[in-house]
Image (cartoon, rainbow, N blue to C red; front, side):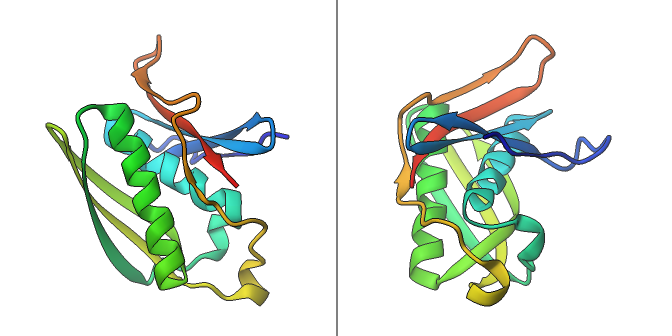
Length: 150
């Protein structure tokens, strides 16, 4: 089963989708910039758990990561978000990413989990190196993807 979220004609909002992978779930961010693709992958991560439209982006949480390449940086970014969700008992629905050299400065906005309203489907344990890729496609769009362990 594949799910996707898109925003009509807006290069400012990231696009995302899920792709099937055995017992786990693939998350993919698609954007006109690498940053937008990372933001979209983060939104796809939330969408594994719940409908992002149900999560109010009221509380900001900052995240900083460093890694030697874009692929490892994507895994670190998603795993930092998994950590923040678990320790703060929050879900996130809006993201802003700034990339520089081998670093990422990000902000995730969300709210505490409300089980009745959010109805979390699964718990994401972490991002993996499976099907890990950060690259531009033939149309010049950035695609950032990996499989997450659920």
